[in-house]
Length: 360
Image 1 (tube, rainbow, N blue to C red):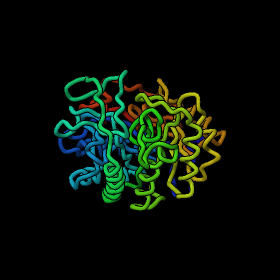
Image 2: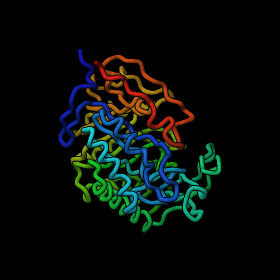
Image 3: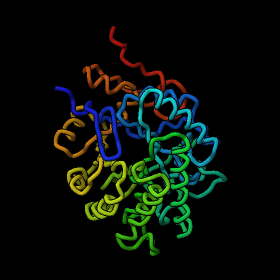
Image 4: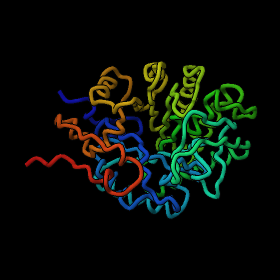
């Protein structure tokens, strides 16, 4: 019996060759000055184009959203041209690729940002128990600067502009990164959003930034080209959500009528987000597990078997197995990745992992 992961998918706005998505993964290989993708990035994604859907590494829509060395952008003409080479290469292999728009908020540092700028966030709440990687080594986090209401509104506009640039670059759509403790989730979470303007205070206020970003991006390029990634109750990057069920039910209920391309849910922690939110979402749902080990093929199959998602995304397995769907289909062994080669560098650990030899 064929794996459900290998079956084609026909959704309201997505037609995919299989139900395997390549999850967004930071690789840190862009030019650190220009934010232009590395010359090998087109080959990297083209090698993995057998996935039903590729979601790129996070791309900043605003330079203040840059979260580390080698993170690419989608704000300049040069960056758009760099990504056009990537989308052309993926499309030449018959693939579908969305750009993930990623603003890290407080998860940055003056050593990363231009002119030593202070990171911005909903509120001046510092990360205390972790350090951040910079080009000069690991550093303690600094206290972020609270964004003014006008700055929040301007950031919404920059997300929409980056989405427009993504379409110009040839992407099939964009995914708004609302997960893993970055800016969108910083607005959603009670411990990082202490604002008293319309972007804070009540639950409706904490939802406002996420809703405004998604609605602005959808208005710019069409809702059928827009996905959203969320990670309810994920404590990553010192996020603490007191009522994830209430927050994310309200968010999904507000977004479902828009007719987005998909909702991408990372399940982690005690809250069973997939089971709770699946009945509230009428469009395509992509499932993902975030744990210490790469998610297995069987785990993804089980999620599809019980109807908790339509597509399942795999991250780290794609780093070292560019032909992951073929390996799932044949039961071929999976190649482990070299952890020390994940971030930064050149070809090694990036485009040199072998695919299965073609059958004679």
